[in-house]
Length: 87
Image 1 (tube, rainbow, N blue to C red):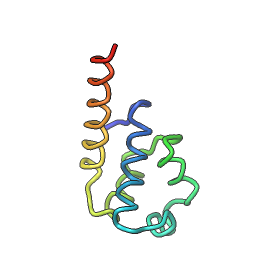
Image 2 (spheres, one colour):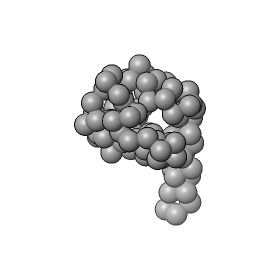
Image 3 (cartoon, one colour):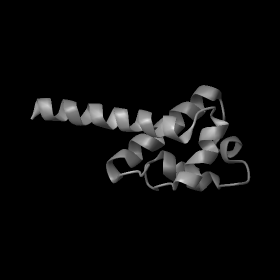
Image 4 (tube, rainbow, N blue to C red):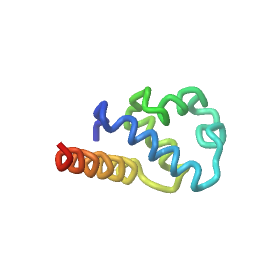
């Protein structure tokens, strides 16, 4: 599953939300496999992680990459639907 530019920010927000929920810092989430700076950029929607990169935090957050992507895409779709209703 590929991340579009529009869903990049939503994906990052989803990862951050899950990380907060389980009580992990960025350093605890990535340990030695990624840098805190890189995960911070993903969470801010400034970097597009590869599927392999998304799997690491997903597994540590107790979800699959597909679950993170499905929820992010669902949020984005809902936002687009609401935007169409307004305009």
